[in-house]
Image (cartoon, rainbow, N blue to C red; front, side):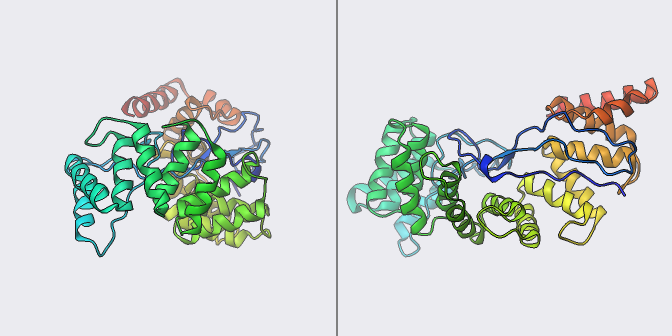
Length: 367
């Protein structure tokens, strides 16, 4: 039975970085993986693939009706909040509606009026969002931080989160991780799941706050229960490794499944591997290969490598060496080398090697 290598997760490597997207990422594994003697033998893991959790970015710039950003699009490091309108205030609804339609100048004018005349914290948070992302106004981090602070002082949890992320990145003022931690704690206490997730990363990191994996797990659970896929993925790694919680593979798999459904690419890869190997869940090779294919097309080098093994060996999917080696070449280009596949690729006929290389070139060129 062909066994796909699982992604080894070490909670100590979950690090908060200021200029990152909302998505957990896996650093490319070492090329020291030993090749299996045959495609049907178990492939042993020889190198740890260490993830670096990235903070949940606040809202991305909303697209105008004519264009919608791709899920993998990297937001600006401004990590700014997506203000939620007060449901009982039609004036704030107008601000938010204009924002959602991409009418940023209108949103700015309406929010300015609300902030100045009514002292409305949601309108202040909106102004911070607009200044931080240059939406309808000139980009100004200092003004963004000022409006976020006013809203945070008035008790707005999303402004607290947004200001915390600015303090971590040093935008709109000096880097102040201690203040950021306080803001994240206040925002999380008010029920902001993104704040709970990022505060958990600080407890994992152990630099700004004392390392406390149990507290980190509690915060990740809060964010995961609120549907945050990054927190679901991170908490799954805790249950898989037994960090901060009792080891529980079934809970880990359920969380991976939830994060996978929410399009977390790394969760898709790990859940696919669990399905393929029947680890903590009934074996389902067809579903596993479908997920690997999806993640591979989302530029996950690990998924591309695992899919290459499946297609080249024909274990779990119809054998397709041209397609399989295409993904091998693509993964190798991204730093995911594989000596076993290199050796098999060298045994192909010159004609088939040329086809695989052309297919990889076409994929890479189309990106």
